[in-house]
Length: 106
Image (tube, rainbow, N blue to C red; front, side, top):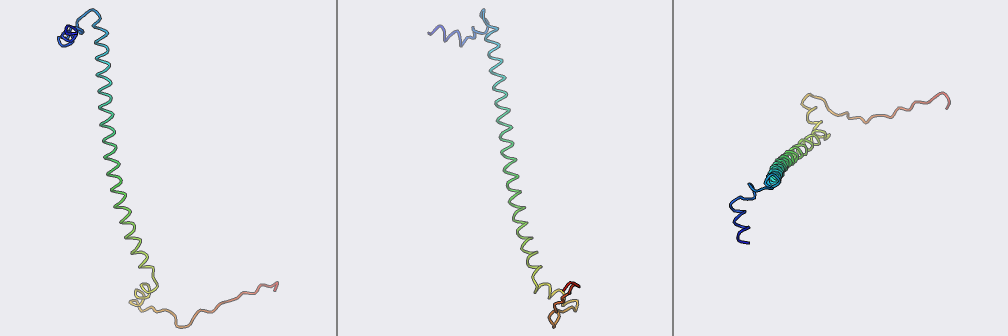
Protein backbone atom coordinates (compact mmCIF):
# COMPACT_ATOMS: atom_id res chain seq x y z
CA UNK A 1 0.00 0.00 0.00
CA UNK A 2 2.84 2.35 0.94
CA UNK A 3 4.64 1.62 -2.33
CA UNK A 4 1.47 2.31 -4.39
CA UNK A 5 0.98 5.67 -2.67
CA UNK A 6 4.62 6.60 -3.23
CA UNK A 7 4.33 5.67 -6.93
CA UNK A 8 1.31 7.96 -7.30
CA UNK A 9 3.07 10.83 -5.49
CA UNK A 10 6.20 10.41 -7.62
CA UNK A 11 4.08 10.30 -10.79
CA UNK A 12 5.27 6.91 -12.01
CA UNK A 13 1.82 6.21 -13.44
CA UNK A 14 2.55 8.97 -15.99
CA UNK A 15 5.77 7.38 -17.31
CA UNK A 16 5.07 3.66 -16.94
CA UNK A 17 4.15 1.28 -19.79
CA UNK A 18 0.42 2.13 -19.87
CA UNK A 19 1.03 5.90 -19.51
CA UNK A 20 -0.78 6.95 -22.75
CA UNK A 21 -4.03 5.58 -21.32
CA UNK A 22 -3.48 7.58 -18.12
CA UNK A 23 -2.62 10.74 -20.08
CA UNK A 24 -5.77 10.42 -22.19
CA UNK A 25 -7.86 10.12 -19.04
CA UNK A 26 -6.18 13.18 -17.47
CA UNK A 27 -6.73 15.23 -20.64
CA UNK A 28 -10.36 14.07 -20.80
CA UNK A 29 -10.95 14.94 -17.12
CA UNK A 30 -9.33 18.37 -17.64
CA UNK A 31 -11.57 19.01 -20.65
CA UNK A 32 -14.68 18.07 -18.65
CA UNK A 33 -13.61 20.32 -15.78
CA UNK A 34 -13.09 23.22 -18.21
CA UNK A 35 -16.52 22.68 -19.75
CA UNK A 36 -18.11 22.51 -16.31
CA UNK A 37 -16.44 25.75 -15.17
CA UNK A 38 -17.48 27.53 -18.36
CA UNK A 39 -21.05 26.28 -17.99
CA UNK A 40 -21.30 27.49 -14.41
CA UNK A 41 -19.96 30.94 -15.39
CA UNK A 42 -22.51 31.13 -18.19
CA UNK A 43 -25.33 30.16 -15.81
CA UNK A 44 -24.23 32.79 -13.26
CA UNK A 45 -24.14 35.44 -15.98
CA UNK A 46 -27.70 34.54 -17.03
CA UNK A 47 -28.92 34.66 -13.41
CA UNK A 48 -27.50 38.18 -13.01
CA UNK A 49 -29.06 39.23 -16.32
CA UNK A 50 -32.46 37.89 -15.23
CA UNK A 51 -32.22 39.77 -11.92
CA UNK A 52 -31.39 42.99 -13.77
CA UNK A 53 -34.33 42.52 -16.14
CA UNK A 54 -36.68 41.81 -13.22
CA UNK A 55 -35.66 45.08 -11.58
CA UNK A 56 -36.26 46.92 -14.85
CA UNK A 57 -39.71 45.32 -15.16
CA UNK A 58 -40.60 46.47 -11.64
CA UNK A 59 -39.52 50.03 -12.43
CA UNK A 60 -41.45 50.11 -15.70
CA UNK A 61 -44.56 48.67 -14.02
CA UNK A 62 -44.50 51.36 -11.32
CA UNK A 63 -43.98 54.03 -13.99
CA UNK A 64 -46.98 52.62 -15.90
CA UNK A 65 -49.16 52.77 -12.78
CA UNK A 66 -48.15 56.40 -12.13
CA UNK A 67 -48.87 57.47 -15.71
CA UNK A 68 -52.15 55.54 -15.75
CA UNK A 69 -53.24 57.31 -12.55
CA UNK A 70 -52.43 60.71 -14.11
CA UNK A 71 -54.37 59.88 -17.27
CA UNK A 72 -57.39 58.75 -15.26
CA UNK A 73 -57.31 62.08 -13.43
CA UNK A 74 -57.13 64.01 -16.71
CA UNK A 75 -60.15 62.10 -18.07
CA UNK A 76 -62.42 63.23 -15.21
CA UNK A 77 -65.27 65.55 -16.19
CA UNK A 78 -64.28 68.10 -13.55
CA UNK A 79 -60.72 68.33 -14.90
CA UNK A 80 -61.98 68.71 -18.47
CA UNK A 81 -64.45 71.41 -17.35
CA UNK A 82 -61.67 73.33 -15.60
CA UNK A 83 -59.41 73.18 -18.67
CA UNK A 84 -62.21 74.30 -20.98
CA UNK A 85 -63.22 77.11 -18.60
CA UNK A 86 -59.79 78.64 -19.20
CA UNK A 87 -60.72 78.81 -22.89
CA UNK A 88 -64.15 80.21 -21.97
CA UNK A 89 -66.04 77.09 -22.99
CA UNK A 90 -68.72 75.97 -20.56
CA UNK A 91 -71.11 73.00 -20.41
CA UNK A 92 -74.56 73.54 -21.86
CA UNK A 93 -77.28 74.71 -19.52
CA UNK A 94 -80.06 72.95 -21.44
CA UNK A 95 -80.03 69.18 -21.60
CA UNK A 96 -79.83 67.53 -25.03
CA UNK A 97 -83.01 66.43 -26.78
CA UNK A 98 -83.46 62.98 -28.23
CA UNK A 99 -84.15 62.94 -31.96
CA UNK A 100 -86.22 60.07 -33.31
CA UNK A 101 -86.17 59.22 -36.98
CA UNK A 102 -89.25 57.42 -38.25
CA UNK A 103 -88.82 55.15 -41.20
CA UNK A 104 -91.31 55.06 -44.09
CA UNK A 105 -92.62 51.60 -43.01
CA UNK A 106 -94.06 52.87 -39.72
